[in-house]
Image 1 (cartoon, rainbow, N blue to C red):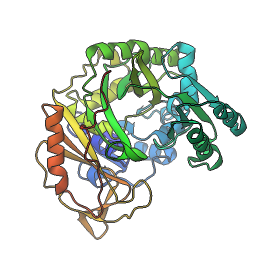
Image 2 (image 1 turned 135 degrees about the vertical axis):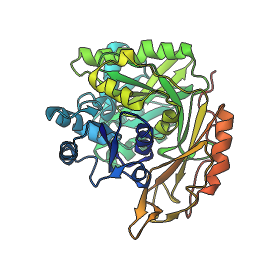
Image 3 (image 1 turned 30 degrees about the vertical axis):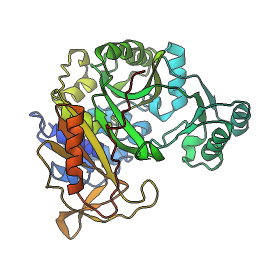
Length: 426
């Protein structure tokens, strides 16, 4: 089978890396890919949002399965187009992808079906939202309703911060159309965890959990980013908690979407807050997470192509989702200035000087035009380095023992990934 992976980040490199060891995969195309995916298959020019162009590639190349990494093509309806043309593709349809593309849709779905989540209000009029927040004191969360590259969630300690966050979304339009509608949610206390399950529209696979870090700087300081690191498994993720999340959150949502005529096929990503009252859903995503994918897939013992095909064709309930013992810790290396202004085209060295229990997944990289052996930076989050070990502490030690070997000008990374714990039970 020939597989096409859509996207260009470290998540997509990790998917390609995992698929490259599958006996059933003969060749891998990545559109557009990066310097890392180029070493494992063939990069083709194209844009993830160009569904028509991607469908032509799939037809011309006789692709047996397309795997979509980022959320924007899914929200734009790439799965619908591929299905119309009889092209196998992994991911939810446009209406099912609303579980990520509209936070309001997701929260209303949960409210209708009794899935635990924070109290919330949805506003599409600025004056109404301002009036509500002006009368509300205490911490709240203001969220852009639509897709905002993981940056549309604003934590507010009180009324003034909440009003500024509202202006950021609806007046300054910092997140474009995504902020034309906003959610105001209660601020939950507890510990956060990202949970992933594969679904064929009826059944769901066993769950896997990871923890990630959104803030740029150590100690969870600085601006929000697309993610600066992650680890798996979450140390407080127990069989009992997995059972609760499966019974009360994941399975009910999959059943609800089928009952409402929008069956969900693909991977369902739940961002949870585990409170004293139990787990509650902060948000759903309609794809694998980044940087969580980079620490989950190295622990997957099952054949990823089998997992993906079971979601497309059915049979998830029969999946044997074996996971390797041990842990992974991933640290993102970012360009100086990220998440604001940064310079591209800087040479990266030391990529081959890593220990055997360390993987490096490329995100924003490219090969030099005049020298295909030279790798250059090409964006904000440049690389994710992942250490593996029998324990979380050992995995963390290995990634930080290696990270200084990879160099590019003004590189920045957090030094407290998996040290500042995300999953700390009360």
